[in-house]
Amino acid sequence: MKKKILYAIGLIIILSLQACVTIPVAKMDSPEGKLAASFTPESDKAVVYLYRAADSDYKAYEIPVEFSDAGNATTAAIGYTRVEVEPGTYELDASTYEATSSIETIKLDLNAGDVVFVELSLQARFALGATGGFRVVDAKNAKKEIQNRHLVPLTPNRL
Image: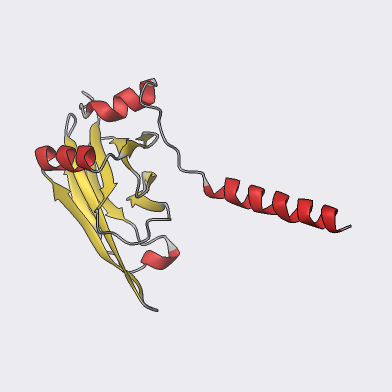
C-alpha cells in the first residue's frame, strides 16, 4: 500500500513539473529560430522584438503582452520574442496578467520594414502587484544585451 502511495506521489510530482515547462523556445537550427535570430525586417510587415530587462522580477512567469486588438505575444525571462505585425499604431500592454495590473503601456507607430526592440521591466511590490513598463531600445544595444545574456529565441508570433 505504501509503495502505491509513493508511486502516486511521484507521478503527481513529475506531471506537475512537466506542466511548468511550457515556454515555446525555437530551436536555433530550425527555420523559426533562424528567423528570430536574424533580426531582419519583413518587407510588408513591422517586426517588434520583446525581451525582459535583466533586473526584472517575475522570472518564473511567462507574461503576455497585448498588441492593441491584434493579439498577444508572450515574454519569458530566458528569451526574446519576435512579433510580426501589420503596419499601424499599437499599444503594448502587459497588465492583462494578474500580478502586472499597474504596468505602464507604450505606443508604437510602426511602418512596413521597421524593426523595433522593446524591453519590459517588472518590479515586484509586496501586496501591490508589479510596477514597471516598456521602453524602446536602440538596435545595437538591444542585440548586445540579447547576446550577452544568452537569451534564446522564443517561437515567433505573427499577429
